[in-house]
Image (cartoon, rainbow, N blue to C red; front, side, top):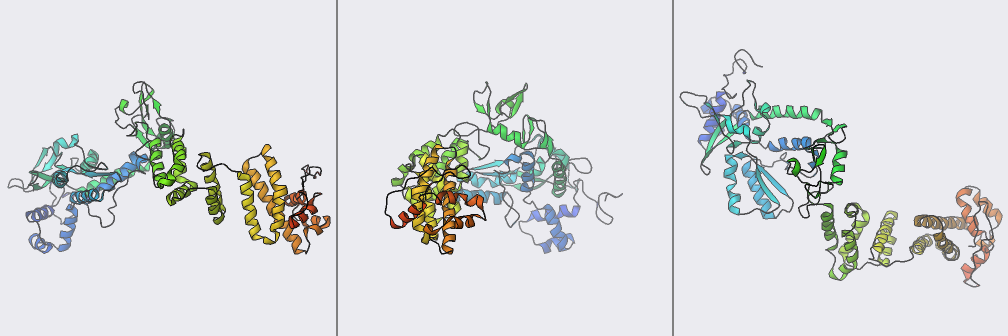
Amino acid sequence: MRGARGPWKKGRPEATPNGLPPRTLRSSSLSRTRRERSAAGLTRQLGVTSRTVRRDSDRLREGSSDVAVLEPALTLLYPHLTDVVRFMNYAGNAQGGTGALVTTVRAFCAAHIANPVIALIDNDTAATDALRPLLRDGELPSSIKVLRYPPIELATRYPTLGPPTAEDPAGRISAADVNGLAGSIELYLGRDVLTGTDGTLRPVQWTSYMKGSRQYQGEVVDKREIQTAYRAKLAKAQSDPNAPCALCAVTAPVYARWPLGPVCKSCYRTARSHPGQRPACNRQRVLIGREDERRICGPCSGNPHLYACPRCTNPLSYMVRGLCDRYTLQDQLATVFDIAPAEASGQYHQMRTALAECEQPRTALNWLRNSHSARMLTGLVAVGQPLTHEVLDTIAHASGRGGTQTIDYLRTTLVTYQVLPERDELTARIERHLTRTAARHPEHALLLRAYVRWSLLPRARRADRRPGGFKHRVRWAYTRINLAVAFLTTMNDHGLALAEVTQHEMDRWLADHPGTRYEVRTSWSGPHAEATAVTSISRTGPRPTPSDSTRTPTGSSSTSA
């Protein structure tokens, strides 16, 4: 608390004009006179304990605070960029500072890191001196950019604290241009954060002389207090992140701040997904500005952000970073199909060309990035074996229900893009289900095959001319095969062959669930049921013909089994 004697409690020495006690300044001066100085030596010369020396050293040490400033600021001001920008984690044992950052950049260059990397360095003398090794290494890769904080007007006449003299033991305050000399991130947090309790700016203290750059290095004092004030400012801004949207006027969380004003998430996605054209530009661009009640693009509103693809200048995709939907799709297709061997690559040429030229590249991109069938296609292409219906049938037979559905969807896609020839898919699906069912119930295999061949398949093919989709006909056939198995199993448990089944056994079996089991009656109780059973066992006699003469209570036609 501030008392009558100043900002320090009773018994403590008076603070210097820059807010630091004289002991701390003297500790800093002694530390700079020699490259290495032991804590014991500082303890003897200052007349304090080693704990005090450690506390004062922590107060003066420059930490890795840039991430703690930039990351929440990016989330607050540009939340739509938080999913495409990642910061280095300094929570562990990662070393901070300009020298460590330059070393990391050189390591990334040597490792040929392909991901886009931006290295932000302070605008001070230490950064200029540390960047010399990078300048000697030559041009950096295109994926790595080294940027410095820009010069600001506030730093052109900023108070600085000089070294102590006989006339001013605590140092003299004078204004100087600290751009390029002491431009740490604290100077960019705003005048309100840099202003001390006495209403004046916290000064920059000159700490050392860099021989390589022939300039003094400075840093703003009271960094801990500045960071505390910034966190309070940030918390106040985060407590009420809502604002009226400049496009829909609805008060909502701010998703982006454009020249036309704050924009909500819904309007942001709409603007990114539906770019417009302004006569002055004659190009499709994202309209993020406003002039005379008309929407304009970024450059026309004084904002250099184009949201434009670097390859074709079309609007960037809001789903992926760096490119438009069309070129992102082409890169994704190259990832999938370029791994195919030469002898199998021609099979996919038609499909690759059609996907690359489709009218809705975002739809194709979503399928390639998120679909199980696309991931299965990638695995099959990598194997290098030419795709056939038989290969897909083998995979479907070894897969569960979910894997079979994925194979069926992939097969339809491959047939559509002429990778595979067309086939009678309805018959193939029914026979596949019949094969699985017969494997589980081998005692009914002969009867089931006869039933499917002479009754089920003809009815399913005639259903092509009736209302209803393909999936409906497949499920219709699956249900009748399953009910036929259940009926035969029940009759077999009672010791009855199909030719010995009477209406009494049928009615007793139907008593439990007449709604779901009625179709078995229409299929197995026709006038040719016994003949079909005998034919399916002995394979003799003429081929039975379906009959539509018998009508069921529901109005459906009965056919022979």
